[in-house]
Amino acid sequence: MVKEKLKIYLDTSVISAYFDERLLERQGYTKSSWKILKNYDIYISQLVLKEINNHPDTIKRNKMLQLVKNFKILSIETKEIKELAQEYVKKKIIPEKYWEDALHLACASVNELNILTSWNYAHLLKLNTKTRVNAINILLGYKPIELVEPPML
Image 1 (cartoon, one colour):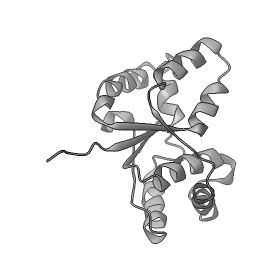
Image 2 (spheres, helix red, strand yellow; image 1 turned 90 degrees about the vertical axis):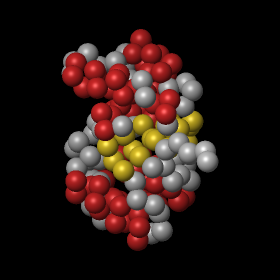
Image 3 (cartoon, helix red, strand yellow; image 1 turned 135 degrees about the horizontal axis):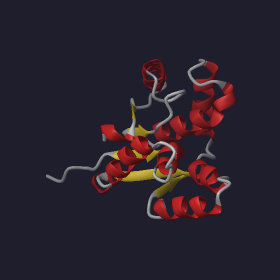
């Protein structure tokens, strides 16, 4: 029996942390986690690429793009993803000001990924967010999703 790999979505905070020397402990955890990513199917979205491409430091931007070049890229431009993201905002799970965080969640959920990995404790990794996102997902017919920081992989 072939065991299917878990599908993981990496948000931009994980990719930028790989090169962020301001928080060495977080960078160390990120780099350690990176070594085991081969055990998973890794996905990012067009939004992650957009956020990387908006990074002001050209050298870091290019390093981040190189780091993710072999990951599968998901579209965020579907009606289904936008509607689910809007539901997260409407239910006040994610503040409207942080629409992109809702898009990351919706992209991972609609594409039936198992895990969203982030360093975003403000909006994604809070227990309240995890519980309410999964309640909405189940209510609307989507699978629950694990929201974890890289060391939990």
